[in-house]
Image 1 (cartoon, helix red, strand yellow):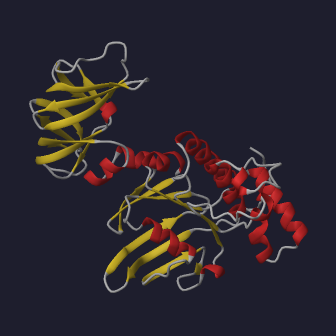
Image 2 (spheres, one colour):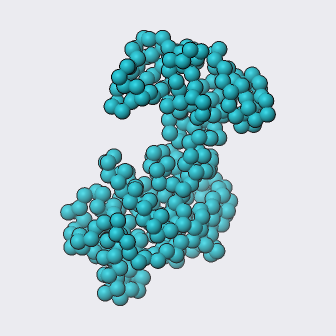
Image 3 (spheres, rainbow, N blue to C red):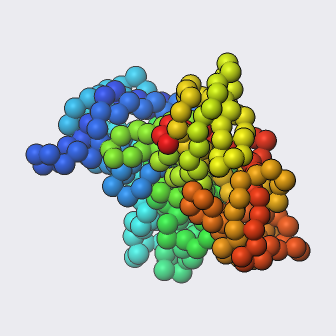
Length: 357
């Protein structure tokens, strides 16, 4: 990827007890605290209607907070309009001008920022170099692929050298292969330039791939914040476990706790793992499909209900005394048969206890 001399003015973002209420009683964001470190990419992740896009729009100044305080760097921007905030936003729809060339689209904002035409043109070309579109200056957006249009939108935002760069579902209009390529480009640019980026998506894989930190939102509030690995390996509850990647939620009983270790029973199968502050009694176990081991000697009983070959692994749906579970196994040469009875155990690491039986 081409390098260019775009300086980073990256700044942190802070929310202090911020709420957003539409009308009389529609609470879109409910009293959240949020800290985005300078030079980091933080993703707001959650289902539709959870408040993530409203949160992003409050950073941009496209929505105003009802209560609370928003800081960019050490500046209180809570009541500032979008034009007075040093942020740039890349929209889901790209928002390119169809009648302007690629170069004109990228340089458009620079003209409003007071740059002379020649300098704006040079900076726009440098921005196109950075996103791998050198030589595309005179093309119209209609002559570009979806991935190329998205790169133009990124270049247009980058050349303004914002303190904070915002992405609103930037890959949702791209096919799977392009999504992977463009998200890698966005991550590389962010890291190379040390940009502060706040990124909104509902795609868990996308969030895990690009983020320094993920903020999982639910019902207008923050459910959990952490690194991708922290959220994947140690979800705080059933919602986060099931939303960050796929997870089986298995009922279990904690039969003893010794220090930080708990012994649990699933059916008649016993297993030891960190207690995570839980005590003896009913609980739930979050288990990733790849952490179920089919064919052990002393596991809990299950029956193969579905078997699907997907190329690099087998996918199995298993029926148990406590319901259906989903497992992934790498052995594609010796597939298990529908109706086959098996014993299922747990990998030595990966399963985690969460509250609730």
